[in-house]
Length: 176
Image 1 (cartoon, one colour):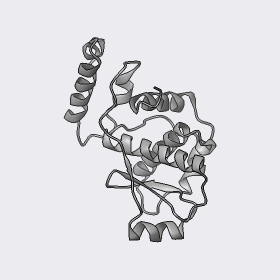
Image 2 (tube, one colour):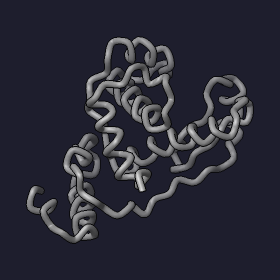
Image 3 (tube, helix red, strand yellow):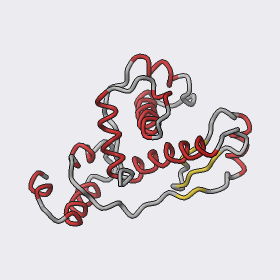
């Protein structure tokens, strides 16, 4: 992999990283972002779409007005029509959920440590019946999305969490 990253052709670097990622399909946590380093890569050809909530999602949102939006299984973002968000807050929710979709789509699994304060705060938000391993993945994705969207409820992000988020920001081409 180190030889690949020394290549001066950004598209070749991206294609090589994507090929490496595709070889590891089904194996979450491939460490792709750790391999990206400071390399300039073109944006992946993925732009999440925003869609209206389906009937089941409407029912969920009606029962959970504190949930502002969700990243859906069909690679879309849907916002809670019962939530009282202003335009800036809605944009933050979209960015937050887009980060989840990027992590899912490209199998980028954060591996940083969760602080005790973050664990206590976010475990109360987890769905019942979610295995502990998946709950930690959800918490990490939530932390990244909230750091990315400047949401203070990320709960005192660590330097490692901020570094991971900055790499994801670059991967999503949000720093251009």
